[in-house]
Each structure stands twice: as structure tokens, then as C-alpha cells.
Length: 277
Image (tube, helix red, strand yellow):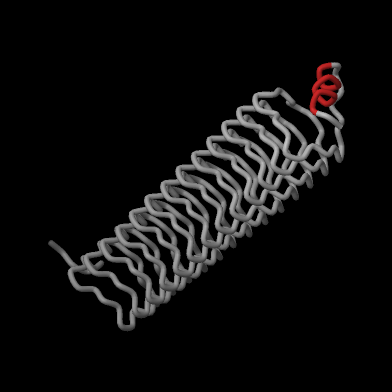
């Protein structure tokens, strides 16, 4: 099918374009809202600034597609191949990317509020400055992803894989990271207030300057983690393993450390729970 034919049929009211083949075409600024493009091959196509609200891209081939500044509110991207695709500044509010394959995808400053990314492969993805407020990322692969400055407030990251990922300055207030794999992740200066992170693995993670006020980090592995200057006011660390951790100048006022493993912890300059000014 040619582009002109697609647009003519859409204008005439047709919405079903299942398995259409439009590789490398220019569809910048088009309105294809509510179109059905299930299993379509749209590799290397340009959808810059297009209106794709509620479009069904289920299991579509979208490798190398440029969707910068496009509107994909409530779009269906379940099982789609988004490898090397660009979603920069894209509106993906309420969209569904469950089970999508999205390695090396770019989502800088994208709006993913309330989006579902459960079990998606987003390894090495670029989420710098993205908004993932209340997004669902259960069992999502975010290994080596860049989430610097991203907003993940209230997001559900249960059993997420964030090994070696960058989350410097990220907002994770009220997020859930229970069972998460966070080995060697960088959370420098992130706000993790009231986070629920029970049973997570933060071995060798960088949590320098992190705000963990009133967070629940019980039964968690923090072996060798860097918590220097971290704010742990009223944080629950019961039964957690902090062996070899760096707590230099950390603030642990009213911190719960019941049964925590504190072997070889460096607490120089730290304000401990039983200290008084």
C-alpha cells in the first residue's frame, strides 16, 4: 500500500490497516488516531508530530521509527518491536507497552504518566527527563537504562531490573521497588522518600545524597552500597544487609536497624539513631 492510498482510505472513514507494509515512508504530522495497525511493518517510518491517539500498534514492527513530539495517548504498543525507535517528547499518557521489545529506544522528556510497561525490554533505553508518574513497570528490564532526572513518583517497579542503570536526581517518591534488582545502579541525589523497597538487591549501588525519608527498605541487600550523606530519617532497615556499606555523614535519626547486618560499615561522621545533639 502507498502512503496516499492509506491516507485516502483513512479520510473516507476506514480504520483497519492490519499488517500494512510502509517501510521508511514520511508520515510527519498526519492524523491516524484510532487506526488499527496491528502487525504492521513501519520500520524507519517518520511519525514526527503525528496524532496517533488510541492507535493499535500491537505486535507492529517499529524499529528505527521516529515518533518525536507525536501524540500516542492510550496507544496500544503491546508486543511491538521498538528497537532504536525515537519517542523524544512524545505523549504516551495511558499507553500500553507491555511485553514490547524496546532495546536502545529513546524516550527523553516523554510523558509516560499512567503507562503500562510491564515485562517490556527497555535495556539501555534513554529516559532522561521523562515523566513516568504512576507508571507500571513490573518485571520490566531497564538494565543500563538512563533515567537521569526522570519522574517516577508513585510508579510500580516491583521486580524491575535496574542493574547498572543511571537514576541520578530522579524522583521516586512513593514508588514501589520491592524485589527489584538494583545492583550497581546510580541513585545519586535521587528523592526516594516513602519508597517501598522490601527485599530488593542494592549491592554496590550508589545512593550518595539520596533522600530515603520514611522509606521501607527492610529485608534488603545493601552490601557495599554507597550511602554517604544519605538522609535516612525514620527509614526502616530492619533485617537488611549493610555489610561493607559506606554511611559516612549519613543521617539516621529514628532509623530502624533491628537485626540489620552492620558488619564493617563505615559510619564516620554519621548521625546515628541513639545520638543526641
